[in-house]
Picture 1: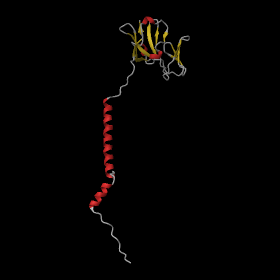
Picture 2: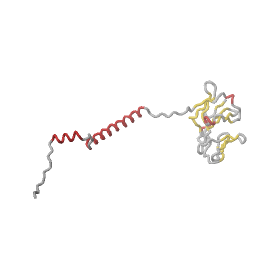
Picture 3: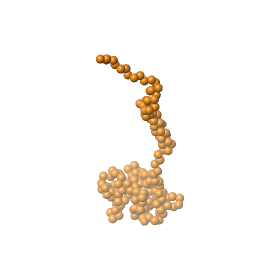
Picture 4: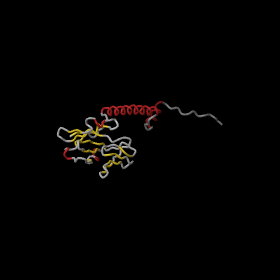
Length: 184
């Protein structure tokens, strides 16, 4: 018996080329990593561009104006707490014999809105029970200090002008400062 081994067939370069043309084109690992790298670079550039564009348009907080006109002083009765601006501006306007003052309708305990009880002539916080006299001085409950006053002046057209950005605190002795009380 003849035990000769057969040699494998030899492929010529032309055979390799013909096989390569018959195969479907596929992406090899090197080309895939090349594409992935370029996609990463382009993605990072897009993120940087978006960040730059966001920087060009800064965030602006549009808040309502802090001043409002409260009408003609003759429209307020002496000794009465006017509650028409409690819901919209969180402010009471009180007319006394000598003039006007504007009290903040924000409880000094936790920021609730107290209710004015006309029968008892006091402000009472419904949440935690703080009580304030008509002047704004606290007399009961957990409120640590009196209500704040807002600046009140007469505008050029003769209306009351309330500026909520300027507050006067009783405990600092500011209720005697100009603007905390409008003398008529």
